[in-house]
Image (cartoon, rainbow, N blue to C red):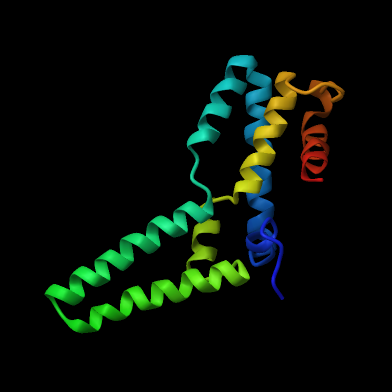
Length: 154
């Protein structure tokens, strides 16, 4: 099955890893919300610099392809196999949303662009960037942030 682009990686990620990524996101949102407007701005700036899993895969594929080409040219022709394997991984990821490095990167906390954007929009909503979004109170902050993330996923 070919999954929609926004669901490919989470669909092929262990449920516990997805849960941990979501819990980390909720904690970061709550921390910024409780610390005030300057913290919301700082967290939004951090999100602008965060590498998503696609960029991470592309950078690693480029590195290992160049490494394989260099070693194939200078050490042993067998190293030319490395760029071929890497290209296969990239193709597999493009079609299925999974390739062997994905579980490792997900366990390291790399998120999809959609997951990063969900946090971004939740922070912007807390900052008051959007109208008609209910105010969040401290007593039910975590539950309300979870509901807010569900809203921005639609």
